[in-house]
Length: 219
View 1 (cartoon, rainbow, N blue to C red):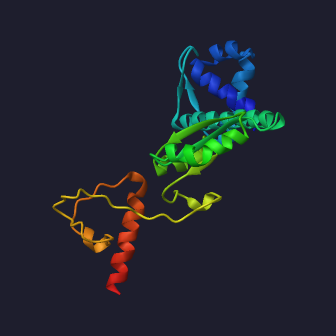
View 2: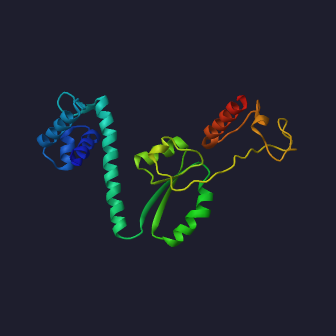
View 3: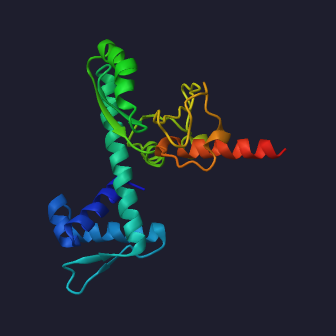
């Protein structure tokens, strides 16, 4: 499918009518109407209803889906064109990175600062978001690299460049009524029936460890 059909479909939706879109993108109205017919034939369903008089339109459910996907397709093409231009110009452009919450300062200090000194013409966009949103950003192409402190959803769809083991750390007040500060380590058994405050990034990983521990203890 010609990507211009998607661009013009977006124009129809955002202009509110075929006639208004035709004027905005400088294309004959019959040609634009024909493109809409081609799209509807391609997807086998009606994408929008033209209201009486032809001065306004209403998206169908299928049309809403295509509108959102068309915006993503066009955005991906624009991003590819920009990255290719940047590539031809050398190491420049924008690198978009999604990180688990509270990781930005450590990442900038330990990794990004040295990288920036070596490649000063690259700009960066950092997004601190939960694991679910990180996964979505990477799948949609909004970010190129993900740095997570817990496994990403749909992990098989990604290539892991680097990983390392980290310890889970439990913090508690020295006068805590629940725990006593007389042990070098806290065991999972020590946390049974104790209220916990967990970050969203490590909660699933923590519960997985707890389930594995409970299962092995039963064997």
